[in-house]
Image 1 (tube, rainbow, N blue to C red):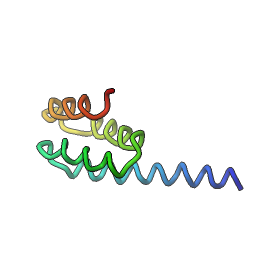
Image 2 (cartoon, one colour):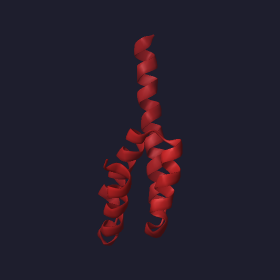
Image 3 (cartoon, one colour):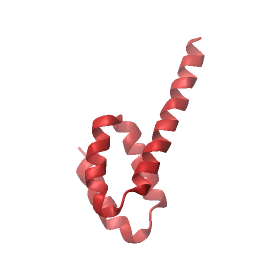
Image 4 (tube, helix red, strand yellow):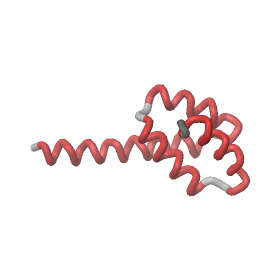
Length: 77
């Protein structure tokens, strides 16, 4: 039973990260800082960080400066 609960928890976290990534991808670079601040209040830090790292992997190169700035502000402490 514990194994099943653990597996369900893993799948739930994966779904949350996918949803977070969707939100981040739909956010313009200009609004990304505010969106991350809102998401930090609702999501677990590790899940949001993982989704943001996935965003870095698929975002256009011209957005890298803004993405780096937001990452440094919210995810490095």
